[in-house]
Structures are given as C-alpha cells and as structure tokens.
Length: 184
Image (cartoon, rainbow, N blue to C red; front, side, top):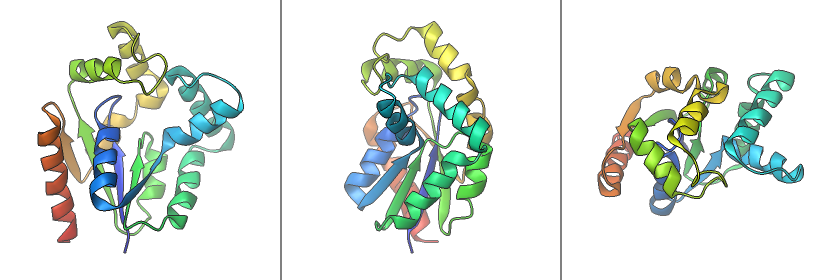
C-alpha cells in the first residue's frame, strides 16, 4: 500500500526541503499544488511569482470550485507508482477533506519561526522575487488569502515537525515520523 504524506506549512517553513529529503531516501514522488499554478503561468507567459500564483489559485477555486486543485492532485496520485507519495503545500480545508479520503494518507505540518522563514526565503531562488523580498512584503504574502487557512490545517496534522534548527535535526525528526508510520 502506498504511503501518502500531505505536507502543510507556512511560506518557507521547509516543506520542499522535507520533500526532497524523503524523495532521495525513500523512493518517493511528489506533487505540489504550486506546480499546476506554475504550469498555467508558463502557458500565459507570466512571471512565476507568489502574487501571480495566488491570483491564479483564487481564480481557479472561484470559478471551478474550492476543491478544483485537490481534484487534480487526486488524479495525479492515482497514477503514481512510488511506494511513498508526497503532496506538498496543502493550504485549504477543502483540499484536506479530499485528500483525507486517500487510504494511508497522513498530514504532517512543518513549522518554523517567522524570522527564520523570512531568512530562508531570501536565500533561496524558488520564485524570482524571493531574494529581493522585504520583511514587510513577506508579511503581506503571509497574510494573503492563499495562506490564511494554513494554521487551521496545521492543527489537524497527525505530526508537527519544528524546523528552527539545522537540517540534520530536521531530517532526524522526519525519520522518526516515517518510522512511526511504518509501524502502524
């Protein structure tokens, strides 16, 4: 049976770091909600920045249903052949409700302090505007519609992994969670 891990967390909490680690160590595949948004932005020849992704996400959900993106995710998961599947970036209760219907689904929250997340964001290059982000614009991004339900979803997580230390500590905690899940 496939192990399906849903990751929730605020901007730059470490979701992608956890995803990449699990992919490298446990033959996992991953699907990110943001990937479908990036695909649309590419087709529209628009910049892949956070604001554009949030705008596209809101438009899709407004016009095609709050669960539009999770329906796409469900189809992607059905065709995945890996023993571990990671769904990265769950941000809305409607997405979580759909995903909880998947056998062997487990929600994991990745958390980190706001200042730590801001520092990580400005050091990475995931979006074109990350390195030039100010503290004020980071706070504005965190307050946007797409981020407002992350806290509520985090409260539903089966596991919470705090990511304020180094990667070694993070990866140790990830392995603890995976070991717990393998014993269930």
